Image (tube, rainbow, N blue to C red; front, side, top):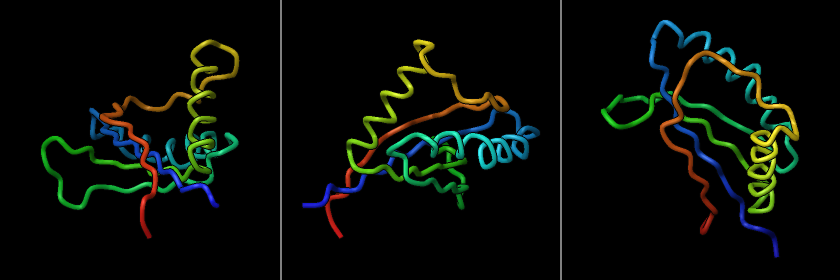
Length: 108
């Protein structure tokens, strides 16, 4: 039986609108390639909110993981980054991740 796909959603805001272009360039050209180089992270797509509303992040990144094992590998990698075992992601312009959640597919 195939393992159910997992997606990891990351909502972000950029406190200073003047930094948005630099943030998007860094996220698309630097951050996503670094994250998708981790075994188990299959791909990533980014989105911008269509109808802004208080309490919702302006930007959304959706990472496709190779099942729960792929997501766990990503989590393990970030723990190794915090402990200094592996290099941290390249820093970018100031931003805030307002939420991060992983979801397992349960239907078609």
